[in-house]
Length: 266
Length: 150
Ligand SMILES: Cc1cc2nc3c(=O)[nH]c(=O)nc-3n(C[C@H](O)[C@H](O)[C@H](O)COP(=O)(O)OP(=O)(O)OC[C@H]3O[C@@H](n4cnc5c(N)ncnc54)[C@H](O)[C@@H]3O)c2cc1C
Ligand code: FES
Ligand code: FES
Image (cartoon, rainbow over all chains, first blue to last red):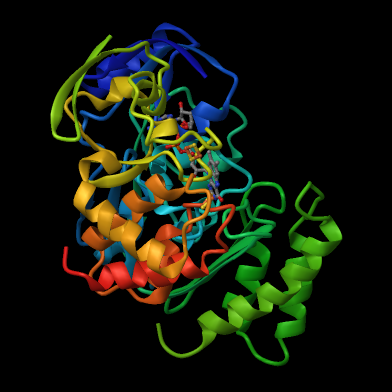
């Protein structure tokens, strides 16, 4: 990464105007990913003065500013209590503490990384994104957008839903990218399942979710649910694992994850 | 650009270009205790404290650090002495390249978590890699240091 100029934004509008002024202008999150890229940045736009690193809550939602670091996400007691520690479990699988003090939520969402351990978690928590100009859209819709919005991610919203959670990252070493990752969240009446690093980006297993939500989870429905899941999710090869290996892992962790969140009350 | 910050409790002014990392700035000004390992946010040897938080200086742009307080091992001398003593007693020292970054993370751990479990310690320090020690002796030394009053 080579940066020509640095701009410390005084407002969202100011940041947006600079972003629009040149396609080579970019927003800085923690700059950890940007640093790895061979990219010429004309103006790097810093949002650190815009108070986007706050987590607040209303009766119905948590609002998390896009400059919130991954460490703050894992330390946010109220948020983690609501989601049965799902956010914390996932964050603690991303590199070390010093890394997570810099890496931001905004950079983690806007990068749409296929290996992301965070995206699946926010998919099952039904996150909604708020952009400065584009307004609000669900995380799921954002992942399906062909063209990334050329905009500033301001915050994400998580509806307050009590539930049981299960997170699993399978990787060769503690600091490596996932070979597969799974996030499960079960509220009183809804089970949601996301699977990522397939090696493509995280997706919700919607048909499987609908089937289990309608038919329940018992000895009769389990084989059908597993079959649906394996048909619905596609797996591929990369340096970390073959599609075949991922399929074997997926079968085991699908069953384990659903069993775990179906146990007991939410 | 001129950046004003505090380094180990002393005010400093650095003239940097926009791409310069804190690791580069410090080493260009002879702060050699901050080590360059991977230069890719993966090994933890370049750890410094920024406003008390452990962070990777290889990925921090110096221009973003206006008015921040930076601490390296030179700024927590007494604590580093204690950590080194326990490392010595447990035979945890080998080439020593990871030690400055490790010491800052251990010090931050002591500040940030009260009564950490073994698992908490491992989770906190997982980003500080050591190619020599195998971690066992370090782990024992860290537990002894954490038992000391700050
Ligand atoms: C060595 C390494 C290992 C990693 N390992 C893992 C892992 O195991 N699991 C995992 O889940 N993740 C991993 N990551 C990804 C990491 O967790 C972050 O998601 C990533 O670094 C991006 O966050 P950042 O704050 O550094 O963003 P940046 O690098 O600053 O930005 C990334 C992109 O997002 C844009 N952007 C940032 N903020 C905004 C905003 N508010 N609005 C609009 N655009 C914005 C930037 O312009 C840039 O294009 C790893 C990253 C690195 C460098
Ligand atoms: S040199 Fe910074 S993490 Fe390795
Ligand atoms: S003692 Fe050599 S890298 Fe840790």
